Length: 93
Figure 1: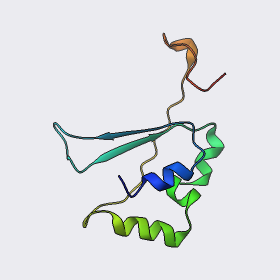
Figure 2: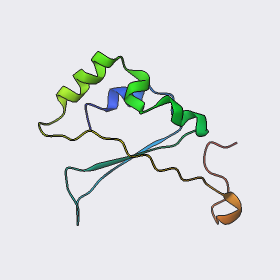
Figure 3: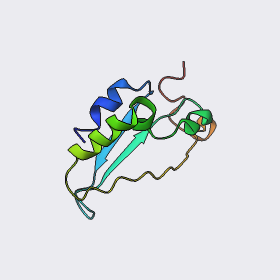
């Protein structure tokens, strides 16, 4: 995760959430949730590839522990305020 933070700091994203599985899962598994402004943001690709040059991405991957699997799974969920008790999401002023 430490190797990934410089890329996150360079990115212009609304929010990023990170979770590490501890109980009942692989403790070496991290889940990152990135909030997008719109569906067009998905076309830009993964965060690291948007803000780093290919050689910087490779260098970042080399800093990760041996055997780390680097993959991307995209799940799209759209917030619908009329179905929520929470109201508008943060950053939608």
